[in-house]
Amino acid sequence: MRRILINLRTRLLDRLTVRRLLFVIIPIATVLALYTYLHQRSTDVAIQIIGDVATAFSALLIVFELRNSKKEKKVEYLVELNNYFHGNEILMNVYRMLELENYNKEGASNFVDLDVCDFAAYSSFYENIAFMVENGSTSIGDIDSLFGYRFFSMMHCPYIQETLILPTSSSWQKLFELYEKWINYREKLYSDGKHYGMKTIRYENRYTRRYLKEKMYMYDRGYRYQVIGNQQMAGKTIQFRTLAFPDITAMFNLQNLAMPKELSSAEFFPLQRSEAIESMHKDCCIGAFDQEKLVGFCVLIPDDGTKRNLSIATKQNKVKHSQTLTFDFIIVHPEYRRQGLHTAFIHHAISFAKSVNATTILAATSANNEASLQSFLSFGFKVLKKDVKLYNGRSRVLLEYTI
Image (cartoon, rainbow, N blue to C red; front, side):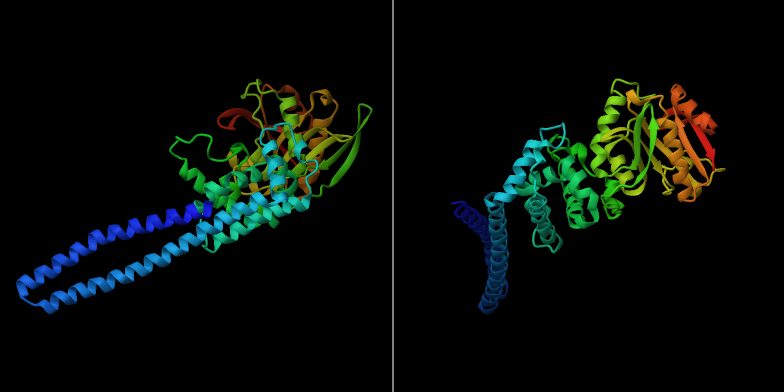
């Protein structure tokens, strides 16, 4: 029935188009022929004009027929592709999990039984669409209404991002290229502000323009972490290791616990999810674990030539940014404070700085955060500036450590 309706609609549009042309071309041809006959008294010329117009009109009809036939086939193919999706048990099972997860803000419980091969089938469906868009056989506008919601449900699902896509991100290059075209289309389409909430599902988990423009997904560091070492603290064995993409949820759960939202933004500027993803690709993220529980982490940024480097952000001409490591972020579980975790992270930062040939470490902290400030000072950091404006104008103390 659906196919019949599509064919009927297409043919109706075709006939309306042809009818409009008839109403325009035939009167023009008649006027030209009449004018020629009245002024030149030449029936042959008038007939020739009418013949030429008829020939041109026939050619136009052929072009329109071919074009409309192509459109009809494209519409028919997209409908069949949509029917294939709904008729495929594996694809619908993954979609069902995604739908449940869209309203589950607590984690990945809906994906406990997700088979990796099932996800591969779901993602491959969209990789095929990416090839169709790339070679021009379809466009984002053609597929948006049919497949957009299901695509962004996958790409913006935290569990899918952290566990299945980002750890081997360079393998999903076609998905990211399709995503960039699609998100740009959506943002342009709904930029008038009248379609709030329609840009994409879970828009807060989108990949940033910078992430896509710089193709950070090609910085594929895999999914394996590196154990740095163990340390005894308050009778407990704390393991330090690099963090991986599957740790992102635990990182933000810890941040929300350690630094409640009601805390003044002047004192604490929270880490953003997009920043954490970028750092997983390009920087060094170190976590402290009490067995399997994340109790603290820090983010260390080698020079990348951007304002993420504190020597560039604060315009420190005396400090070469190419030889600077930025101690960007640190957070510790409330129950594990004053046990030496902050100092341990500084020690690991120095070791990492040496491994990347940095000669200076820069850190910034609030003047009111006495515990953090004293920890840096006691380790040998010196105050470089007492009031620098960072994080959208917030006042910070800038500290320097020379290796």
